[in-house]
Figure 1: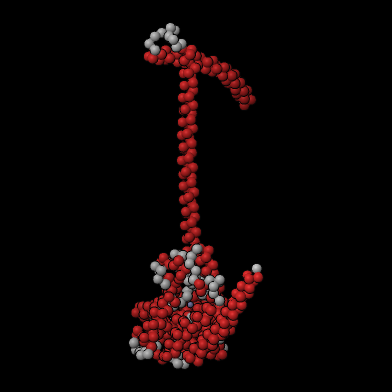
Figure 2: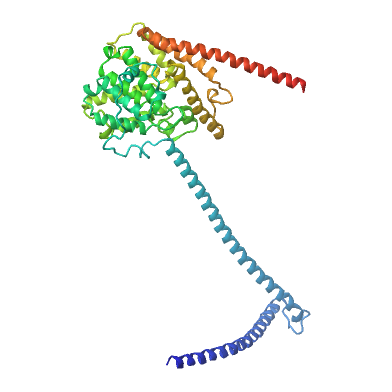
Length: 476
Ligand SMILES: [Zn+2]
């Protein structure tokens, strides 16, 4: 059946082929006929046209049709060409329109990519609100090993001479934990000891690995605060709430620091600067991250506080962290100087001002420490500054001279900072606490002298180089 069917199919196909060949032939005949018919019609029209223009017989006319025909044909050809060109033009216009749309789409894609890039950069600048993955993992059991601090270590922790470079992060966590216990804060505020461990771990997680503004800096500032509390017997003058605020603000004061200062944030119009309207963007951010951490019950050392106490600790911590913005240095020190000669511990404003000065002292206290502990911090700070100024140069932003690797030297930077910032502040605090002179102010003076000597050597070297260059230029 299938075979027969196939045969029939072939026959049928064969027929179709013959018909097609015939068809083509027929078609050719038809075309010729049609052309003749068209020419006749054309001639008829021409006749009519000629009768209109030349109202006499075509045969007798002075313009025989045979003369006009090529012209008419040419006219028709031109018309055909015109149509063809118009069609082509329309097609081209459509293509241009399509290409234009493509260009617009590419431009839109480019803008989208740019926006995404900016979003990534801004998200890298801050993990606040959007990217709080560091805050999310919940550690049931704090994982750092608890070190049993020796008696010597506990004693050393109370002094400004403590060398933080000798300790691992987990050891620093144990030291911080010890300070909260030793000051009686865990006992007096009914802080859950496990929550304290978890909170400190979370704090460590939320400091970035910057050359300077990192967890070790957080530890140093808090340890200096602890040693000042001990040295100046602040627990006899302040309430435990004041002590808790001072310690907690010190721990949290640089949380999630991106390694680029407020000037950069403002000039580069970062997400952080936009959020805080250029008003202490970093310090506001450190506070916000701190209280985001406290919003987690398992990390909230204030969990057992009544609402009034929580309100107070929150307000005090915020005030203290915001006071660490160096842009406010002169304003805060000036206010303190006005109060220091008649200082009154029962006056809330006086106490609040002293606390702000204390956290400021601790924040910039490296030069109070022995030279071998203090000096590496200068290198760390300069490394962070140079990273910023290099980026500012690359982005065409203003560069502060004290951050510029072409302009700053260790000796000039430190001499000026100790003479004009550190000594005036510590000497004012010394009026209230004369005991800091020997252990804090004297080391500062020694450090100033050392850097001044270094500066003289640096300057002499520079002069020598300059004169050498001049001689070389002269010889040329
Ligand atoms: Zn700091």
